[in-house]
Image (cartoon, rainbow, N blue to C red; front, side):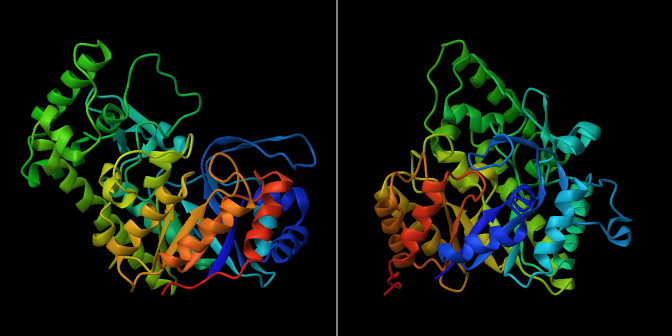
Length: 403
């Protein structure tokens, strides 16, 4: 079972490419998955040589080919020159690398072009979330995928679809009761193109938007309880239009992934789809609730079975503390995808998911037993030294392959 370590270009600048590669090798990790396009963030990096905070912005870490972007109205900003140079050095080093690419999470482009962003039932634009139904967004995604493919690395596609309501701008705040199910409803896009998709699937988007607004307002006012997060339970409170809208969203994401894969294949590359469902469920505390993760991917417009034929690999974020829940989530994807789709499992080797090396070792063994082909660790620069060491300890135990 292969392994990789998620890494930022800022790590390469801070420590030097050679040092990062040397550390990776000593830990027993096979390759680096380096960010080649990223979004705004503020990260605490405990081993950083100068200060402890890293501020990140939207943009690409590769020099774009003007021909690839000539047909795209949306053009991403460039990341700092030092970090782009460090990426070039890494790519030319001969070390195995995958290209971690964030697609539709881009506040800079969303603020400049709000008409291409997701829109809630209340009419609010989610400026950090580009809508996968918009043709300009599809063109942008294809150009970005071609750019990364041109660097000679596999594309690890993060945020290639709908994003949740709670994942977006900095310092998001709400001092009202917004349970998980109601946050799901607020993450449904009602832009013009998504409305058309809903209509084609047999849903009435106006009726659904009205039902969502009425229900969310009533929950916030404590006039009715929040709903369970199951799709059937949500349909009970906002109507059967929701089920048809979910089908439309899945079709939109599946079509976009096919479109991007075609761009990748033209460049002779490969596409690994990174499913964010595990982050939507367990990001804060590693304690996801409800059915196994694959059964909740519909919340982001994802049907893993439909994507199985559209990708060269499938990565899942197993942000889970409980070992039994971890195994259930990984197995849910392995069963849904089938044995012909390589499955990667992304782990957080430290808090809030893994308390020690024994826990991490057990999860590696569980991932292998469930049929995972690779395990990735998130991430290098944000991990304390003891957590990095834990990776090496876990990898020193031979992994038993799936029966």
